[in-house]
Length: 234
Ligand SMILES: NC(=O)c1ccc[n+]([C@@H]2O[C@H](COP(=O)([O-])OP(=O)(O)OC[C@H]3O[C@@H](n4cnc5c(N)ncnc54)[C@H](O)[C@@H]3O)[C@@H](O)[C@H]2O)c1
Ligand SMILES: O=C(O)C(=O)C[C@H](O)[C@H](O)CO
Image (tube, rainbow, N blue to C red; front, side):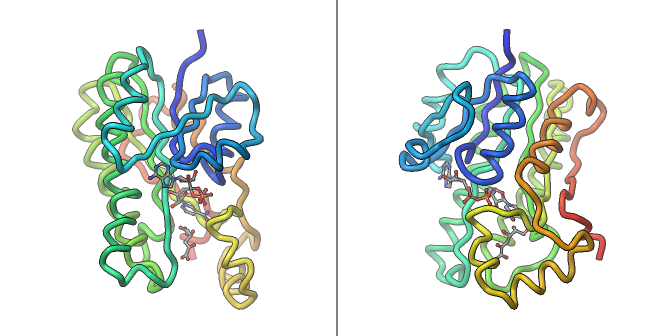
C-alpha cells in the first residue's frame, strides 16, 4: 500500500512541484489548497488527490485529518506574501495566520497520525527566515517563526519518532516571485547575488523534501536546509 503524504499549497508553485516529485516516488499525495480555482486548473499527475482546506480554519483542517487512518508525511507549503502592504496590521496578522499559525495547526493535526507511523514533517521556511525583507515584514517574521517552530517541534516530538525539518528555498520560479521577474532591477539584484545565477525550479525543492521524508534522513531532525543556488552563503 502507498504511503500517504499531505502537501499544503500542493496545487501551485513549490507545493505542486513537491507533490509531483513525491507522487513519482510512489507516495499517495493529497494536495491541499484554499483555492477551488487552483484545483480546477491543476494539471499535475492524475494520481495526485486534490482537496480544499484552509490552514487558518481549524474545522477545515480537522475535516481532512479526521478522515485519515495513516499518514507518513506532512509537508507545509501553504504560504502568502503581500509585498509592500505588510505594514498594515490586519495584513500583518493575516500573513502570520497563514504562514506561521497555519503551519503549527497542521503540525498539531498531523502529530497523532505521524506518531503511529514514525512519519516526518517538512515545513517551508525561506531565505527571509535569516535576513529581513523590508518590503515584507510579516512574511519575514513568519518565516523566522517557521524556522524556530521547526526546531521546537523537533525537540518535543523526537520521543514519538517524528522528525521535523524545514526547507529554506531561495529564489524559486513561481507565481509568488513573478513580480520580481517582472522588475528588471529586482531580478538583476537577485541573480547577481545568487552564485548559480538562475532561478530555482520547484522540482529541485521537491528533491530535497523527498530526501527529508525518506529513511535516508533517519538521523536528521530540527534542521533548516537551504535550497538556494548558494544565495545564503554569500
Ligand atoms: N517562490 C519562492 O521563491 C519561495 C522562496 C522561499 C519560500 N517560499 C515559500 O514556499 C511556499 C510556496 O510558495 P510558492 O512560491 O509556491 O507560492 P504560490 O503562491 O504559488 O503557492 C502558495 C500556495 O499556498 C496556498 N495557500 C495560501 N493560503 C492558504 C490557506 N489559508 N490555506 C491553504 N492553502 C493556502 C495557495 O492556495 C497556494 O497553493 C510558501 O510557504 C512560500 O512562502 C517560496
Ligand atoms: O522578498 C520578496 O518579495 C519575496 O518574494 C520573497 C521570496 O519569495 C522568498 O521567500 C525568498 O526566499
